[in-house]
Image (cartoon, rainbow, N blue to C red; front, side, top):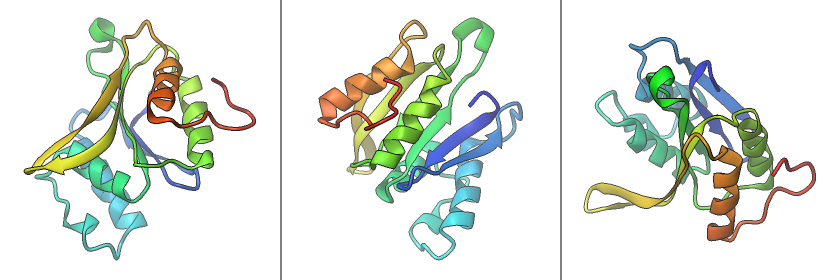
Length: 160
């Protein structure tokens, strides 16, 4: 995750990494639009997203199609540490759980926020969140999210 702006995990558990994090001029929404044009070329709803939309708006719409969207929000790492913001779809597959857990297992020093139960209310994106500090590994936050949302851990080779 260190090198990328974002990671998208589809319902089959395929991990798609996008954007060079070191490119400060590259926006998360640019990476999302590139992904949408490649993976959803005929989806009229998703293809209405433009550079004027926020990354959270783009992420929200991708969650409606079953994707987990993980933004690398690390900025001023020396001062604030590494961080990610994860947007969860309404349900996740066993394959997505395994892929997400594998991804997070390699990120023990990141702080993490998980946004879920996402919806647009009067034009405003709302949802629930779990957050951590850099002292709480992302895997612990994921486990709390699973418990709160009533989602069982991944079967088999789970790293939690």
